[in-house]
Image 1 (cartoon, rainbow, N blue to C red):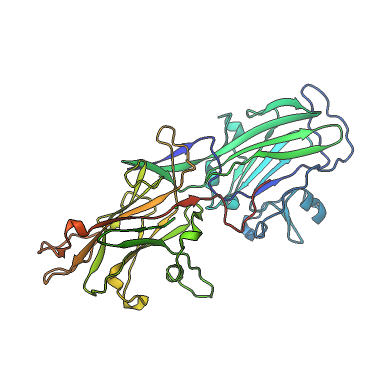
Image 2 (tube, rainbow, N blue to C red):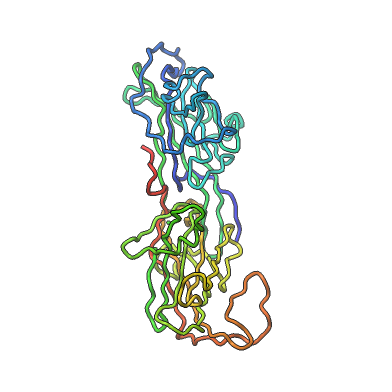
Length: 415
């Protein structure tokens, strides 16, 4: 399995906060014509409402937006943030058009969930070094270029002169023997500067959202159930993984939605058994894009009960002991994965497929010489094996549908 970076015109796989603005005193020159003198036009379409935390930018990350003497009202009109002293760019993608015919595009690291690698953002239609970002900080990538360069296209449309360009980001793809996935945020941004004799606009024309996994019980001689934890911390000092397994999604809750890299809390349990000596083990856990556990593509999560070592975001095994409050702790196994999406094997573009989790399980009886513990990252002792239940007592269990979403349920999308 290998990881590499891909650069494609793709869709958002994360929450993207969109800010678009036009300096309301600016007009873009027509090709080979002088810029007309326009009165101060008003933005025809009001900017989208800013997310609650968009302006919570660390002081060391703030970048000046507009002139130094900009007023709070003007700062708001160009969709930037004002803290009483300074106008600065928020945690968003901000598109602006200047009086002298320049695009200014500022992409924030926290404009997506999970955060985007701002160094991977580039204009799609050119490899001209002059069209690279004018500055990249730990929190922002800043582009400024002429509206007649860097692959910008020109057209006339319904009384407007339109200059259009688009950009995208690269993302890391993990390639496995039976499928490929990504957990990185990535986006395609199509933006325009439009003007007429009476108005001027800076528009984001297209920011398409890409689509997480769900849970069921397997019937048979050995009854095993796979559930996804739904609990959340409600008090200060709460341990997230403990809270997660306090409640579980039920059938009515599916499909469950998750964003990229968001933890998915999985529990596999042995049902209707009261022998405290029984130990439930996970032989192999993997994910597919449809309910068929044999379908392709696949992505390994656990192999021989241990995290798949070629995954950049290793599956986390959650220890279960007497403090868990479970009547038979050895009848349960828990692990945490970071949400991902499958990518197409031919061009490595992210898919909108759902994700299903599958585990092959086995019941074990400890022997006098060895416990049923599955050891990871160290050699097993060459001792007599534990006594295992026959193959007829093994079981395959699958989750229900988990859907990848572009934003948390309480977040606002782009318009």
